[in-house]
Amino acid sequence: MVPLEPESPDGGRRRGILFDVDGTLIDSSYIHTISWWGAFRQQGYDIPMASIHHFVGMGGDRLVDSLLPDDRDKSLDSEVMASHAALYASHWPALRRFDGARELLAQCHAAGLAVALASSARNQDLQVMKSILDADAYIDGATSANDAAESKPAPDILVAALEAIGVDAADAVFVGDAVWDMVAAGALGIPAIGVTCGGVSAAELREAGAVEVYEGPRDLLENLKTSAAGRLLS
Image 1 (spheres, rainbow, N blue to C red):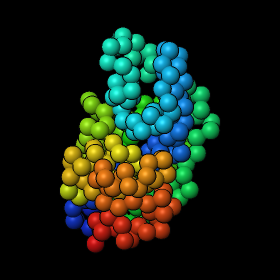
Image 2 (cartoon, one colour; image 1 turned 45 degrees about the vertical axis):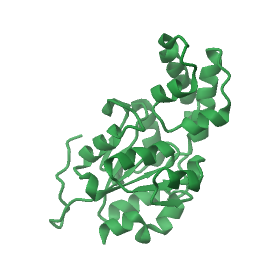
Image 3 (cartoon, rainbow, N blue to C red; image 1 turned 135 degrees about the vertical axis):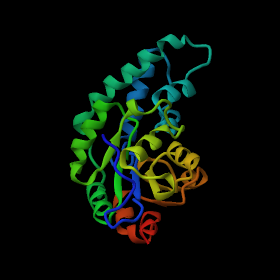
């Protein structure tokens, strides 16, 4: 996508809001958890689902490295990730957007914010999730795993999303559901809004750097004017 000029229609600086997608707008965190669990089992590793869920939101390469023994045959990591991708794709028909997700994107767009999906999902998965969101008219840019050299908690994907919509980090907020989202935003000095709909507690999100926490898209939508996103427009 050609980057947009960092200027709003009224001549002021362009401001934007970045959204993680998995677990934030789409109810997929636990589907990822069970898909990773199955992929690990296929390679003979019995990893508790609770342990897996803790790392969901990290890039797949980092998740695998965090959960499997250091003395494993790391040449097989790619097979684990391929198995996860296949298992996750089998669940595509079950994916649903969270209540209020489409409306939240629409309201942010209507308020004058440039909207970006800062996703590090595979491009195939991203296209499926965009279809489920049914909100292309309100989305100014989107990223996938192909747009980042390093995965979360590195901030590369957020940098790519900012570039896609032509917004500086100082003029943006980020919405995510995982500890790793908060860490990535913090590395760029971007205020991070947490949502607990991905299964991570408000306390964990705040400890990781969230400036405020909501239950999910609907809760954020209902409080948008007083949120960090709303203050960006004041």
